[in-house]
Length: 96
Image (cartoon, rainbow, N blue to C red):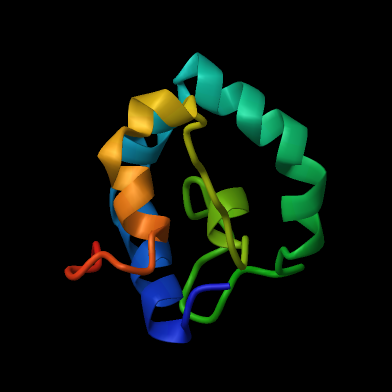
């Protein structure tokens, strides 16, 4: 779960620009991922809107979530040296 200040910022961004989230959610692959993990996300969901959010806020179901995650799987070869640099203990400069 993100820290409270970051979670507030995410909820604020969703509430102030619900169309941006709607656009992101139109992505077919993202929809499939969310459908697979929606039960897990529902378990960490507020029963009521968070403090400061109205019951009629657009995208309220997403605002009530306590956490979310998205990722893109890729073959190891596509990661190239980045993966080796990340995991190799002798790399002088760690990746951000």
